[in-house]
Image (cartoon, rainbow, N blue to C red; front, side):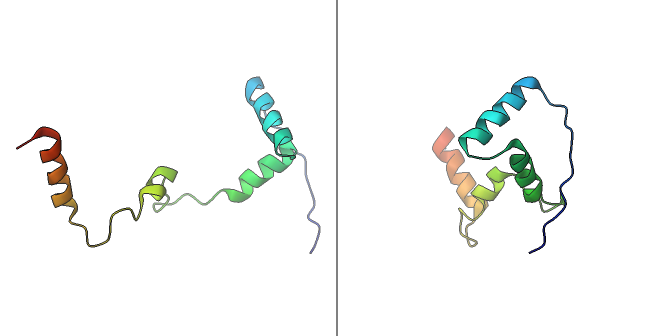
Length: 82
């Protein structure tokens, strides 16, 4: 494993956000630099297939064979009656 060169990065952030980041980092035995580096490493390229966390969590709840229109129709009947 090679050691990668580290460079300094200066950020201008809200004072309260900086304090929250410091507290979070300390609680998890990390430096703020490690926290930011981990965040950057976890960034994905944004593309059309990129979904929010909520969409990802909901994906797969219904089986592939589910008739979505029928299920929605039944929901409306349950909610509003016939």
